[in-house]
Length: 125
Image (tube, rainbow, N blue to C red):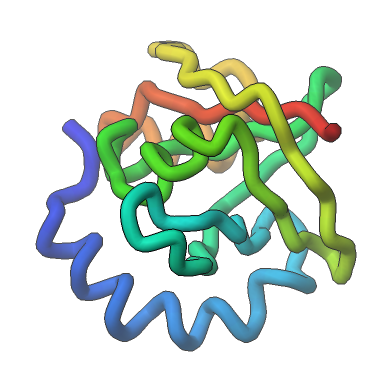
């Protein structure tokens, strides 16, 4: 079970506007900058993001069918703003991992309660 779509809509309208101001600088947070598949419009999506040896990983708390994930997959990449830096990322791939092995222990426990098992891996360009 991933988080409900109603919560995603609420977050998009309210929470993301506040978090969007903080995530570019906080550790373990970032903002994914991506373009809409049909509109071409630029979007900014706050995420929890973690550095891994091959690049970066994002826990897909609303599942892999979220619009922002589909946009990143269709464009074959995005930009990530984290800790005050902008990084171009490519080669997005979704990984199903029941053990949540790329996540830090505390995050692994929290997202485990929500049933999150899908992750988006991205490599620096």
